[in-house]
Amino acid sequence: MAHCNCSVSLIRGDGIGLDVADAACEVVEAARAVTDGFTIDYRPIEAGAAYFARTGHDIEPGGEAAAGESDAIFLGAIGLPTIRYEDGTEISPHLRLRDRYQLYAGVRPVKSYPNTPRRLSSHLAGTIDLVILRESTEGLFYSAAVHGRSKVTDEAVEDTLRISRGTTEKLHRFGFRLAEKRKSQGGKGLLTCVDKANVFRSMAFFRSIFDEVAEEFPYIRCGYNYVDAQALDLIRKPWDFDVIVTENMFGDILSDLAAGVVGGMGLASCAEVGDTTALFQPAHGSAPDIMGQDKANPIAAILSGALMLEYLSEKHRNASLVQGAQLIEKAVDLGFSENRIRPIEFGGDMGTRDVSGEIASIVRSFG
Ligand code: ATP
Image (cartoon, rainbow, N blue to C red; front, top):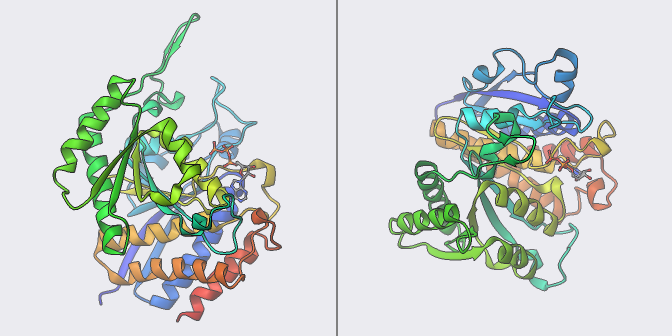
């Protein structure tokens, strides 16, 4: 098999982002060493709230363009509540990256692992394995403050929720393909469209495009849920779902809810995929309450590293990259089932470095 050289723009960012990005790189390096079929050239880019406080820029000059020149972007976390733009909102150059590179498909896996806190008492809680596909360039975030698109007067502020045909077709197609891929690996073959089509024209449009695209995928079952009912069902019966496709703001909220159901934010990995590049980051923020204390759970970032290897494997048609991704996922599974990874987030005794070191050592043991 040909050796594959990949480049990754690395934005470590703020708070625990620094620690979890290092942890992800450590584990990806272990997977690289075992498979010995690829190399990754990391290209650091400075960005974030701390950088803004030092320089007055939220990303280094030329950083936005440079990020798109690599095969993928890896990000730790960005933002600190005490450092804000003049309009009072938090520093968020990563939202511009989503917009600039049209990273419309936000993939957020939600899976329960053994020996992690069970928030639900049902015996089925251990079988939760779903993906929330959050549209990530429009919806209500189309008017995120960083884009300057709100209509602002002294009397009222209007934020627009935008659903476009082009992005929504691509999003739903991505969702059906994801459900197909998971079905080929034993998944349910079910895609659930989550919206508020009973109230909003934009949401009825979102659903009608879902139905159009569904005709291309006759072997995937379609489900429908209003977002309020979906919140209820993520507590009542999350094990019934497979892939859930939804608007940006709904996905933002539901994915935190679902992360809580399987333990906490420290397991919430995320890929934001566009047509030419993709950004990988844990779904959590910079967690200033625990920054600099070696307390962050790095597994969300580590699993995001696995998602990145899977993406690079498809981009470069290289099997050793997907092997690397599988080794990382297997190591996290094994680490939890043998009680070898015990993050402080779940009441355990292992800090960030101990958790990543143990996962890296399990990955190496597969070599
Ligand atoms: P954002 O809006 O950028 O997503 P946020 O302020 O809503 O950020 P987070 O930074 O994600 O929230 O943190 C929410 C809570 O979850 C905090 O109490 C934080 O300590 C905890 N948390 C987040 N990520 C982790 C992690 N990796 N390990 C342990 N605890 C975490």
